Image 1 (cartoon, rainbow, N blue to C red):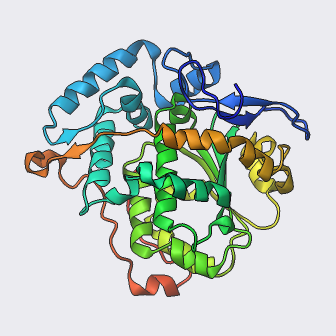
Image 2 (image 1 turned 45 degrees about the vertical axis):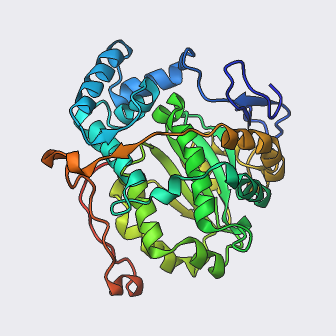
Image 3 (image 1 turned 135 degrees about the horizontal axis):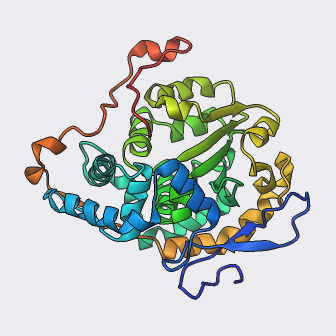
Length: 356
């Protein structure tokens, strides 16, 4: 498949580097969402069995049981196809109660102004021009799959122009991309790895992008609702002023997520050592073995446009008047931080030991 073309199943293709250890990558392989009839590689089958308690012979029974649970929740309307439900079952390690709770949170957050942030999930056809401007800013590009199967991408924070596109619109487009990943079984099992490059990031950009309320809500969504497994988050070359901004986020982070965050200055080698396969995916200007960021982004551009044109419309609804008592208050409270949080080094709020 050439860039911008579709596979036989009609899915857009994203060009990814061949996973090899040489410093010069001369060929590329296309990434496309896993087709429904395509079998998972042994890497994912083994990880799913070992880490998620997945037994292929029992998947159909799990899906039938979860659908039965959902039918007893009169307040929820959501997809019931296998791929959607498996995202939540895998995240919950096939614990049905946990999976149902996260589905409820997912539906609620994306539809309730009181509990969530519905406008974050509402890009439409009229947003194409804004989307193209976002692509032209070159803020993000997919990189491919690491050795453990995690899907990786790179975000160049300083490339975001606050005068060209609003932070909310940028984040809407990120959710559009996330919704595609939600349905990919390899991402459900292998998780994600993210590198955020803050080189050159300004205080003005920081103030525009990290509003306290919105940042709190976005953290709430990723930890309480979106079924994603985080392998590693790398914050590279964070400016000193961003310490205060990070304190807006840190109090809400679960311990498991904190343990997977790396803050690195100048040299990404510690991240390469901690995350096998990341180096062969990263652009050469970062010490990686891949092409340059400009080349990778250019190869992905048309495929990213295809993702917008073929964005998933996840139909959700919540009728609070029908919500059972047992399904109330499922999300943890992400309240306002005390004033001294921003003034004391290391201050944080403990939210419990729940795993993400």
